[in-house]
Length: 116
Image 1 (cartoon, rainbow, N blue to C red):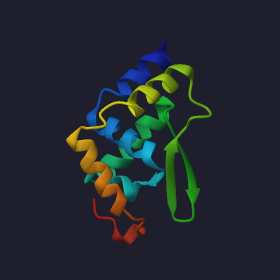
Image 2: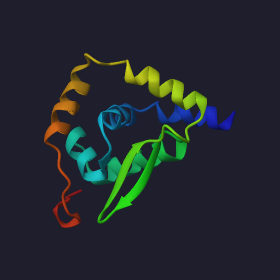
Image 3: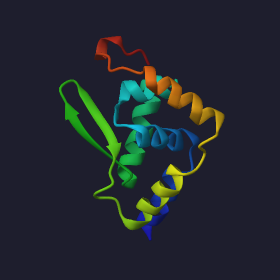
């Protein structure tokens, strides 16, 4: 029951839904999420952590960067259903469309270039 509740708590925030939509497009580092959503590093990191703890997202190190992606292999069946619902939802939402457009231009930058 606790895992089920944590899934819905993780999805109860607009920023986390937007992050999941971005990660459904492609894997990203924190700096790419920041650029796509036009948010601070601390806000991106905090929300990615919540999504990871809920089981939606996984991370891996790639040199200087921590790369986040949808954890399709390890997520439970409830999370998988919610991700599929999200994949097909909000396709014409203006905020999501803007995030997707910014994601096209997002690039990985070094830690010294990140400003919170």
